[in-house]
Length: 127
Image (tube, rainbow, N blue to C red; front, side):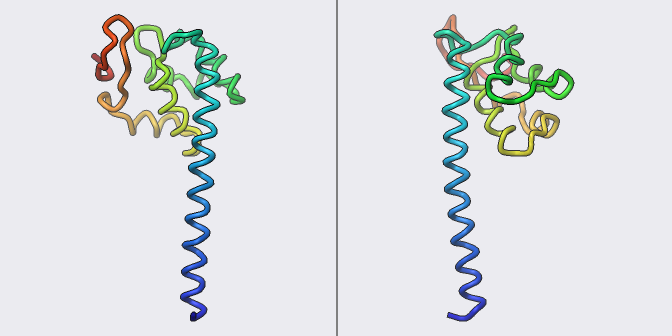
């Protein structure tokens, strides 16, 4: 092995290890967020949108109305926030430097999919 070859191999090794740890961290946070959401949802697949601040604080995050206003607008469907929408947003937000403006601009209306309670079928975001 040359020094350059070893350095390249070692960098790749550390990168793979870091990705595995990141995946584990994401999975851990997803499970934790899902548990907290489910506790607040009390058997439903959604929470009232006005409970969002409490949800964030239970997850150990300081809720800031100014910072999270666009998030609530993005996730709010007829006064409720669905678990699948929240978890997708939260994990992305948590592991991508907490930029709500950037996250909101990355979503288009077809990316968030929710399950409606009345019909128990999937519908596109914004329908």
